[in-house]
Image 1 (cartoon, helix red, strand yellow):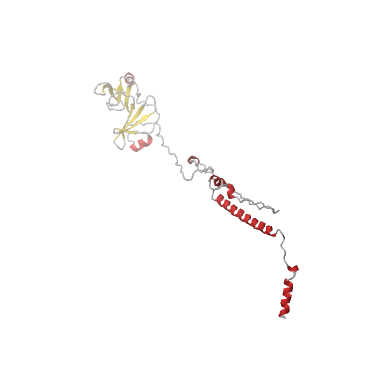
Image 2: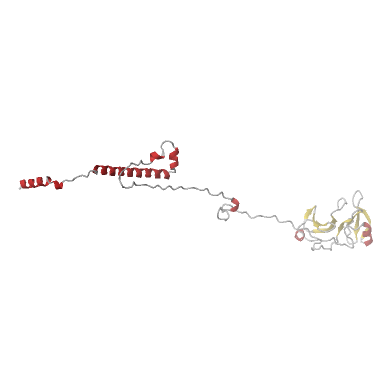
Amino acid sequence: MDDDLDDELRRLFSDDRLDVHATPDATDAVLRGADRRRRRRSAVSTAFAVVTLVGAGVGLTQLRSSGDHTADELLPTSVASTSSTPPSTSTVYSTSVVTVPAPPSNPSSGNPGTGNPNPGTSTKPRTTTPLPPPPPSEQPSKVDGLALGMTEADALKTGSLVEPGSAADPQGKCTAYATKSVPDPNAAIISPARGIVWLTLPSYAKTSKGVTVGTSVADVKAAYPTATQSGSGLRVEMAATPKWSYIFETDGAAVTAVRMRLNSSDCPGY
């Protein structure tokens, strides 16, 4: 039985119908297929290299200017082929990223592009120094018909001066008088050039603010905020014509005398 199997196998192998006959261009077809596979591998490798260079920020122009290799050397060389199959192509897309610097910030306008104040800066409120109160405006009042600036002759006509007068200063430049309501010999001081420059009010007289003999120093300062210290008393300048001042003599606690003084006095000591 084994012999019959061997005979059958020999008959089949010797049958010409089972032979595989190669076409005349089989060799060329195999070579062309191998060449196509080689070109595809070369194109893929080149595309991968170009993409890598673009990702690293190096363009193809830098490869051309480097001088080591030309662009033609980096591209695959086409081989003439009689095959009707079109060569494969590979397209590489390059994307460039351009970074634009941010505009400089302006501290005075706050955050750029938002229009909001800069949270890093603080605006301090502007403080203003309060202005001192203006001096009170009051015309000098008359005392027993006597007034600041009145000449000696006119003052004598009022009958309010107690004669005779005396020298008000060592040089005898000005004259001092007592008045019928104030026994002080220096109650009225008269300058030959400016008239009455100093006049003492009676103890019962009051200023327009209610200050009189016996008023406390604190009440004087409250009534006249512009009062300033002048010797042992307080001086309050008045905004009037002619310019004059109140002189409030004190004992440190209360007013002991109220006088009116012409600011342009030329009598020494008054």
